Image (cartoon, rainbow, N blue to C red; front, top):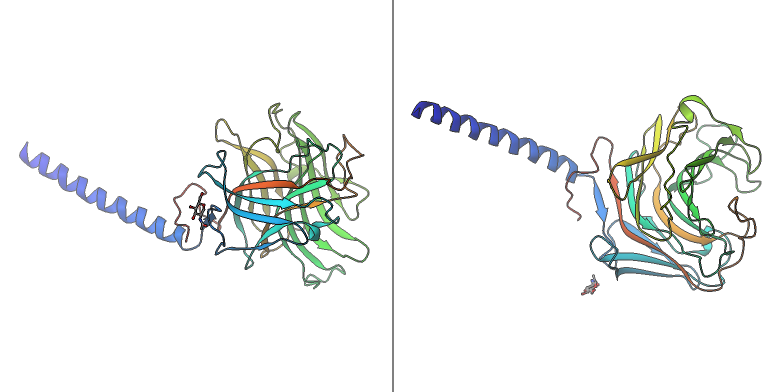
Length: 313
Ligand SMILES: *[C@@H]1O[C@H](CO)[C@@H](O)[C@H](O)[C@H]1NC(C)=O
């Protein structure tokens, strides 16, 4: 009996040592590169804050709906000029690459002005005008989640490899989803803001989505994210009840995925020309300030789980 107990205790101690060594290795590896910004600070070590014109940015705002009671408010001013440059944004102070990106976000609420044209964007972006792949168009590294405030149940997912400002010639794939109804509005490859070339096969998965009648991006925080690698980009969100991943678009293919790295950004801006299918009149300049809310913003390099513990800074 005594021997058995002794052997058992030794084995137990050995297992504990091994387990804590593994935990230590996993933890150390993860902490080396993954991070989360909880926005309970005035200046982030990861992000710069850009607020043009009358736009305002408020970090460390008390918010009972935020998981830590604090969030970041990006406030687009009334009368803002059209285009992303006319609105407030956060942008990483360096480019980052492949990996998992996630945020907990509440989009612009235009219920007070139903025809306002306002875009909420959560994305990575880089375009310095160079054409490394030599296809005749400037390379444009960009993977987007976007919402138009006039139709907060619709999510626009887009991935760009090329974009030329002068004539808007480009190469991109895009999918739009009305998540309330579960309808996939389109999944296309585009070379202009015109004709859709429908995607199929591994570029167009999943082909159906469940209806989520309660979904409205402007009425509650949701966790959104994407996994970016050289041959696969998966856009997903978390089911607010179960915490399970809802895969919105699992794109595979090699030629239409932009190479890393890029800046990691979130913004809100006025559009005078991009309208949702259900409201072609939604082009108005906002007549009152419109805000988006970011509870946290996270990045994990390839191979890291989104669910490992983190040390923020
Ligand atoms: C954040 O806000 C709290 C009040 O809610 C304040 O006590 C704290 O000092 C603020 N933090 C910073 C970094 O300003």
